[in-house]
Amino acid sequence: MKKPADKKVVLTGDRPTGALHLGHYAGSLLQRLKLQEDAEQYVLIADVQALTDHYKDPEGVRKNIDEVMLDYLAAGLTPDKTTFVLQSQVPEIAELSVYFLNLVTLARLQRNPTVKEEMRQKGYGSDVPAGFLAYPVHQAADITVFNADWVPVGEDQLPVIEQARDIVRSFNRIYGQTFTEPAALLSHVKRLPGLDGKSKMSKTLGNTIELKATPDLIKQRVTQMYTDPKKIHISDPGHLEGNVVFTYLDAFDQDKESLKDLKERYQEGKTGDVEAKKRLMGVLDGLLGPIRERRAGLERDKKTLRDILRAGTDKGRDRAREVMRRVRTALRIDYFE
Ligand code: ATP
Ligand code: MG
Image 1 (tube, rainbow, N blue to C red):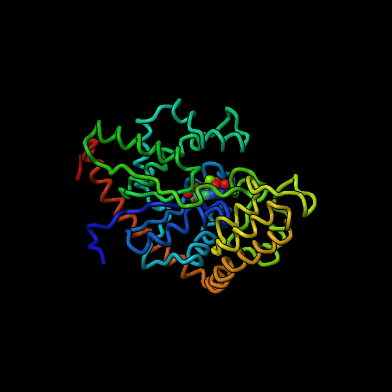
Image 2: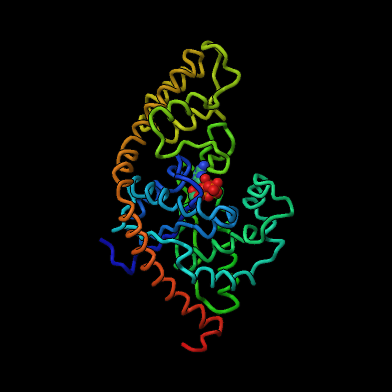
């Protein structure tokens, strides 16, 4: 067992904009399951960030906090190893964001490829809410208020982490060494495509398989999955590139030997989508079945969920307060301390 002083601090999180899906699982949750074993891990439910583009639906954001907590616990994160924090209840994050805003230009925010793509999807044009445009600044505060070393995220978040690193460098240069420079940790599946083959499985795009999906729903979703449009008859040679069924098999099928055999037969025109999709249904049932069962048990006890989140938020806030004390000293605003 490592001494606490040697432990790396991990910060990561999700927006409560819906239940978690396979993209979260592959891109971030799997890493968190490993990291909780020997890092000091904080997992943030980013309700303030969810409100930047869901500000007209506060009730929906509130409801989804339970959904996300259920998914965390069902997937195997546990409160004795991971600290769950509710963003809106740690006002130090908002406080730090205000100072960070001075270190970022509007032009830099507008150039962020992730934000640009999300603005396009949401059809904001130039009418983008300022809070949304500035969410990478807020996210930099999420990370640094815990003085985190590592941030396990999907590939879509890399420009946002880069922005956080820039802010940390500027802050340390201007006000003196205060923050650790955080590093992104990518998993073996950096970006899981959506069912439709679009670049990313995402709640906003509605192209997901949720972790809580029933066997019937899994079947339905896999059936509609995008494969190889050129393969019409079994005897046609099949292509694996851009073929969502095989991308998911690569991500979730543990039996690599027999998967290799299936791929060869598919490419040679000896088998077709039916076999590949059946196999994927089995793999996903095996993965999601136990998660679904644990979730059903937890759903009956919402009070426990709240208690876990409250205790974690208290603990997280203690750390945030400590870091903010140092920030105030660095910023020369520690008047009454
Ligand atoms: P929204 O559409 O509301 O933004 P989302 O589906 O993009 O939701 P987030 O809460 O924004 O989910 O993402 C949480 C974490 O999960 C981030 O680290 C993100 O990179 C990761 N993630 C989300 N979708 C995928 C995906 N398809 N592949 C890999 N990682 C993903
Ligand atoms: Mg997102």
